[in-house]
Amino acid sequence: MGKRILKSLIRKEMKANLRKLKSQRRFFYPLAEPTYSEDEVFSALNSMTNYSTTMWSKVKEFEKIFGEKYGGEAIMVNSGSSADLLISFAISEKSGGPLPFGSEILVPSFTWPTHLWSLIMAGFKVKLIDINPSTLNFDLEDIKRSISIHTKGIFVVHLLGNMGDMSGLTRLCKENNLVLMEDCCEALGSKFEGKYAGTFGIASSFSFFFSHHLVTMEGGMILTKDKEFARKCRLLRSHGWDREIADPVVSTDSDIDGRYKFVSWGFNLRPTELQAGFGLEQIKKIDFYQKLRDQNVKVLEECINRNNNYLSTMQISNNVDCSWFAFPIIVNKQAPFSKKELNDFLEKNGVETRPVVAGNLARQPGVALFSEISFDSLGGADFIHKQGFYLGIHPTANKKNLMKVTQLFNSFCGQW
Picture 1 (cartoon, rainbow, N blue to C red):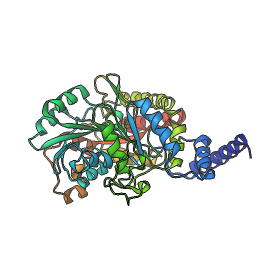
Picture 2: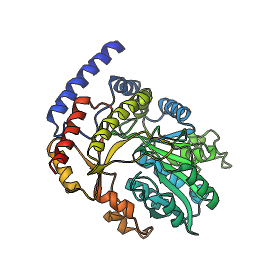
Picture 3: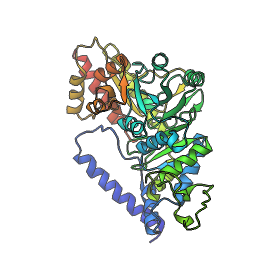
């Protein structure tokens, strides 16, 4: 069967299944919709029919293209959480990294919990820092207050595509000899002063989950300009096996088979060729998709501005070109209704909502289990935890549905 005919059959099947899915779902405006087409599916099928499914040539090609586009050496892994995990282990002295076991790392209180778990698993202590309730991103003044003699690093988060003052942060890290890492899982394509998120610190993490900017179903990437750091991550990604590094270690033991030589500890966090095949097609569309996301943001921003006596949204930081991940909405304190009342109204009428990431992580029950996690007052985080939620801005959203969403907001706010 020819490639064109097969792609046509796949497209027909996907369209039929998508119509069926939409007819059965509860929400007319969900958090996310599929952004992949027959091209990604065909690429995955190609790997399977060629019996090439585990990490190989497509992974290498995707890493090369991603690194060239965003500025660094790229190491693909099976999820964004795994990217955080490998960065956490690679900075440890036990992996030949710069930070002593037990060092304190500052982390914003709004992030995905595996960000914290990764650092704890790698043997570090975590201090949660506050966020600016206007930008939802790190508060530089709170970082300054939080630095102690125990602080050795900062693993910052570019939440929902926004960024903080990276000039001030990099200067602060240099002055205090702190290692800077970046979680860019929600910020692929964002820039500060024209420089891509993920290129300010020693390394950065990205996520390619279904609802993210670039989709490989599950998948993630580490980006670094440090060749030695990249080497550590490649060893950690695959059992400590030196097969995937450019300079294999020479063993003095002649009885060790060079094909199975392990020179470090590690995990099995390798991606598949199927995931990389998706990535190779998705990265061709990423800039176009971002334009569509930006258009959706403008529609929702206009709606919030019309109802600004009750509602507000994230303020983009100075010098930031934001690659929006989702659209946050904050119910102002003076509003005559609660966040729950608005959420219930939206969901009852077909609009799916979510908290801003996991809310203030200091309030999550799992955090209380670990003495390695500490925090002081988190007033900004508490405010967003209580008053904030977000909507999806997926690039496949049609304007008719977006206008229906704005009408629901106007209707709800207008009754007060």
